[in-house]
Image 1: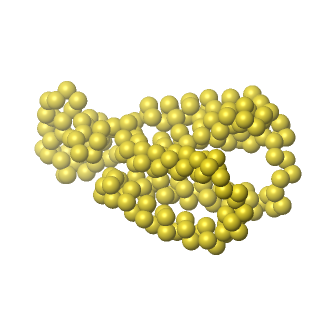
Image 2: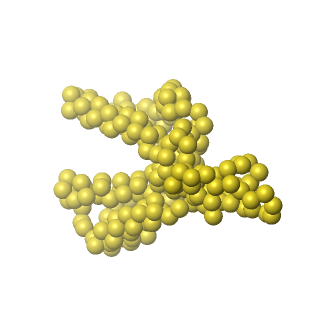
Image 3: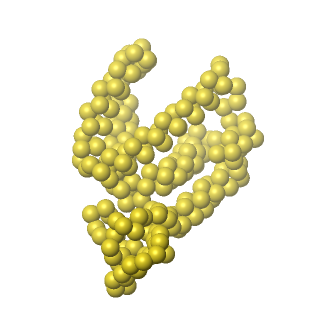
Length: 213
């Protein structure tokens, strides 16, 4: 994020735009924080309830609250839009993209995690920038590429590192290792095994393979 912000300053992109930059920055940070919280709750709902219920509820309440926000804050701008078939087609295309995003995101979150999805979404700004180089003739900076590869390296490191969660030995009488043989817990002494898995693990419905440390 620092590289992308620094590149914007160096190339002079959108300098001087906006009347109150501090409030704008605070709103961006607040929106990003709330978006991250919503993705974590989305992961919780998908793993404990169902993906279908999540999509149905977010479609119902999302349309309701978005309609209220549109009516209060943007009704004047909406009336000024010179509607024609090209603008209508752009709105339909945007709606289709958002429909695909929110339909496939629960699948990706269930197979990985909300953190992995948010790390991937950091590259979205760079993809839009690369398109802007051809459509809007943005100036290019090498810091954009540096930030892109930094995000990719962070994503690979996060996905390749195992997460260790301590388990109460009284919960399980037996642990099954990846080879399929059964390992019995000792009858005496304090045992504190740990279950190892990664964010790219198996589905919740399947019996996960565990390894006793």
